[in-house]
Amino acid sequence: MNIRNYSYGDASVCREKRQFTVYLYEILERCARVKIDKEGFANKNYEVEDAYYEPALLRECFDDAADKAAFNRELIGYADAKLKELIRTKHAGVKLEEISLKDEPKEEVYCLKNGIPEDAGEADLTKHINGWGKAERHFRNPLARWMMNVKPDIALLLKRKGVKKKDEFVLNMIECVYTEGEENYTFLCETGKGKGYRVTVSRKLILEYVLELLISEREGVIKLTAGDGIKPCSIEAGGASTVFLKSDRNPNTDGLSLTKISDYRKKLVKGDKIKEVKLVLSDGMELNI
Image (cartoon, rainbow, N blue to C red; front, side, top):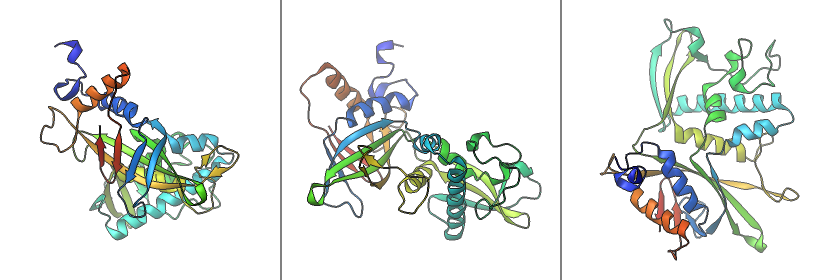
């Protein structure tokens, strides 16, 4: 093996998508022309205000929260409502397998509730959900736990001048994958009388829930804003976009060539004159370099 070819383009033997995510991040943070091909964003041009590599946004909001018990109540209430909605509507981003749970270990089954009651007994709700012990564990909705731990490969804070030259911000998350269905999350959920579901949720849907929770209009302690800190600005949720990485591992994928990313990054680092980056975000991502 030639070490100089280890992480270079389509012939790479590097199995770490993070290697290529870093390359893509370096390109995207310099992007001045962005369009969002989604309802509500037509005919609007943005620039990248800031780019973030694997940001743990919800976790950082928890660390910053003055009332951590209120944060956890809001998180669990949101996750319980979403899980009920997923089961009721048979959401396209979820696989549901109806099963009997009588022979399953109790500690591996989440009993669906309506949030955390006012009297939570001996539960210490000020702790991070990862540190919940026996007194808190029956409140630990798996969706909520994954929302607290998931990190998008890249997040982009986009900005444009809107009406009366007021700054408008959009937050969009980007997932880099080699193949469809690469990362899913599975858990057992009881809906009553020993019956329930084996639930499989896509990572992309978890990211969209994180965005929705951080940027929703409702009152609560979980809130993400932009601006300079003195005059915070609201942010719109742009959603999560998936970019497929094309390489020797998946040559038939209609995705972004790793050779193209590597070549462009090399020119960027050397300071060569290069083509302006243009980006279109939708459920996928179109990068013109």
